[in-house]
Image (cartoon, rainbow, N blue to C red; front, side, top):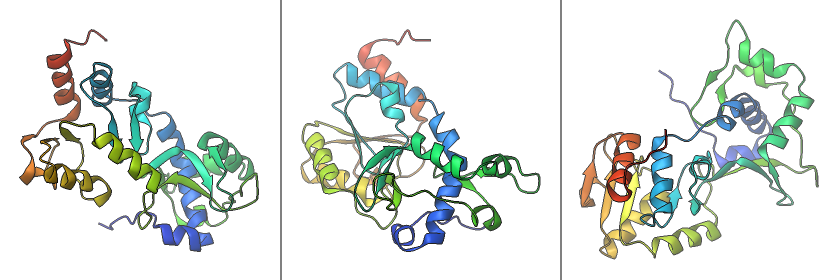
Length: 246
């Protein structure tokens, strides 16, 4: 089985072909991302925050589902797919608006990519889709409406640094914590794992809820091997009372 290679920052900024391929695949995958709904785990964390148990969330996710579930204080380490940003003038736009421009410049293309009989697009884990080279080659990508520059999803690609102001915001939230709870992450990426290292240095207890091993297992005061929806909902029920929401 061929290993899927995620978009690299260097390829995106240097390669017209790479950007075209990314935006073509994203044009197919965006509907699934934009229509996604929070699950029980997201809602449980929002309940815990509303109840004063959770101070806030530092997330590596880029789908905005924590905010959709009702979480108020969310630091998105890797940005948000809901926006695009110009690499030249730093203007920022809604991804929905960019999607309309993509489809206007490529009339009929989406229908063919989504439902081609030979190879219909398959959903991929990065909010995009798997497409054949011939399906992306002629795809037209618009420039920034302010300056005509290069537009990039407002997320952190592999090989790109998390913005300093985002890191500072995350550390500020971390400094308020009495416990660091890691949920649904193996902590393979350093941008998230760094908070575990700091917690160990400061003797802040670490809890982990995850299916499978994580890079925090050896230092965790508690590790729960369980599904997030069930485990976090049970935790919220225990600390705040049973949720009556259907």
